[in-house]
Image (tube, rainbow, N blue to C red; front, side, top):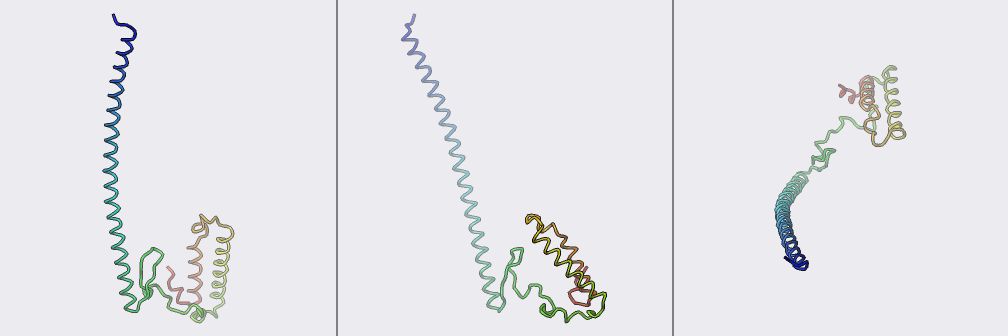
Length: 168
């Protein structure tokens, strides 16, 4: 029969073996996770290099395009979609904005003048509403911008202004 001290020593050895086995399993698991993390880091570094290379190529192409257009006497701008465009290609009105009334061939027609005045008042009121009453997050959707545009174009068309021809 074994003594209590021998039993305790035997139990300690068994526990140490279990603990050592558990630590070996944990170390192997952590080693696998570290290897997977290194592989992921390598893949991300490759993706980053490709993205930086593409961005550099885009920048170089953009600068070359700007230089070529400016050398040809064209100004370059960025539109609302973020595209580079020659400024001369931007849609320009076919009439001067400062004296737009001169292009209204039927401005003496009382109905056309009334429609134009009503459209201007509606547009002004809509813009005032948008700035003072509309939630800034809903600013683009709160006022009925298409209705205001339709009314303005209809009134300009009635007054004989060339901009009214753009109405649909």
